Amino acid sequence: MKYALIAIAILAAAGVAWYLTRKPPSPMIVIRPTYDGPISQYQGGKTLLVAVYAPWASVWRATSEALAGVDHSRYDLAMIDADRDRQAVRDLGVEIIPTVLVFREGKEIARLPNMMSLDQLP
Image (cartoon, rainbow, N blue to C red; front, side):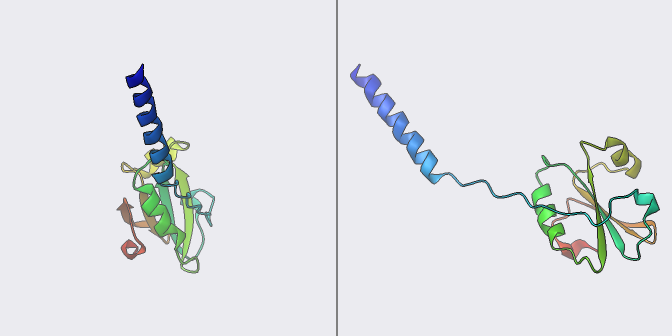
């Protein structure tokens, strides 16, 4: 009985220590798309960035942080959730999630799988 009480006390102390030292979850980055239509029908005069993402993708946090800093005077941004719109992902030929596709004048000029910074944008 004495050893059981000691074990319970140790487990309780470990639980308290874990609770006090755990890191709070970092907030999710919210990105607002500036274009919500079909990619093939984009008529804006800016470069169109198409972010194909999934919330579970490990690199998506870094990509989303980079996209949050996009200069909207130069770029329009469209978002495609790979889990919700699998057909669009297939149509675009995306194999790596996340991937940022860059379109200029209706043509794809760059494909950036696992984009981590704005320096990678053309």
